[in-house]
Image 1 (tube, rainbow over the protein chains, first blue to last red):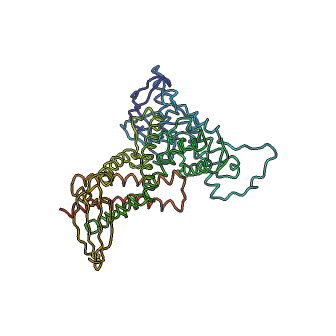
Image 2: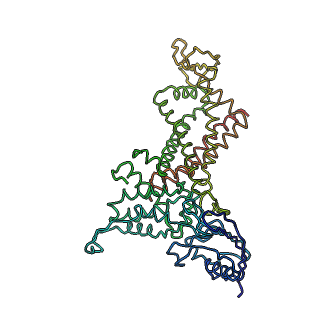
Image 3: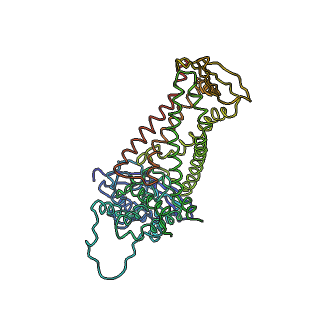
Length: 255
Length: 262
């Protein structure tokens, strides 16, 4: 088909967490501009399997930008050159014929490499388990509109809740800081009435776990916000900081 | 660990220390700038030398100045501690990282800019603060006419270990106010006529500008003072007042002396 591209891929290959990795160059020929980035990698992998080589390992699941599995650092940017999309929503029309594409895994000590481009992001799970929930008593189902919530607050909570936990914020941050992720998870509950009882315990527990996991600290560069596939804003970080300092300095809730 | 020790050893607590010391240093800049406007006066340094005496001998100001020295040290120390932690958080870097695509240059280079400023502060304090306190500076004697305060006669008195650092009295018979003060103005005027020294100051003010363009608004974000209605004001103050106006006026001082003596 006309308009198809030939690309040179420089892919990070690493056998396991402890082994030393390296870049391996592959040719991706006859790439359709309508392919997604992951489909392009699927085709490359088919070729590798046919040759009897180990295919390139990378995380993926829903392939429609909602699961947060895909996590590729493409030409120096998490999820590639487009704004507001995950790697699975990135199409090959965003690249040019003959281009060299460098593909790396997320780089953070808190995200150890499992194999090649796949990283272990269970640090995020442990932060969530530390406090990213509301405790609900069992019983009858309460009426949906029993508690009035102003629309601006509901909208803000909803936009915080769109975080898919992919880790692009950590990948983009020069300090490998997880502040955007943690602040979105803190905010989505801190904004709503149901989140109030555990609000000040939650923020302390989640920040403590974040530090425990070895993420860096926030320099307010805004790289996380710029690279986030769902547009989580820096306001969340300010909100979390406010809640954290309020909790630590003025509240009696302790973790 | 006590609650407070735990708070300030967390990543957010360390950033709070950076933010508060940084903002305190910003307020100092305003005071320092306004005070140093005395340098522009055409009075052979009478106002400036009196101001220098006030700043070093008025107890409340002395207390604040020690708070200031502590802030500079703590700000630099915590920056170092945070940077080391951040390095540890990403032991293996990227082969390609398109930083400019997602963040401003200043925000990614606060450490470099801060280091330039720290070196500048050491040179700056060594040349003026240290000399004023410890060097054997001559005195300037100003005879100010009581009828016409613009009429100031200046003469130099040699260094004298026993002499008071500053004296101010009115000689009614002669119709003059006599001010004798350690002549810091002379040291400043001499330093600011050396072209490489002026260049160093101007470059340091460029570093200050970049440091504050990011630092000022960043400090508010860290504390959590983020509000749709006030963020534009904070951004304006950060860029135009602290990032442009203040460094520009500081840089104007050495340039003023260089041009005056050209």
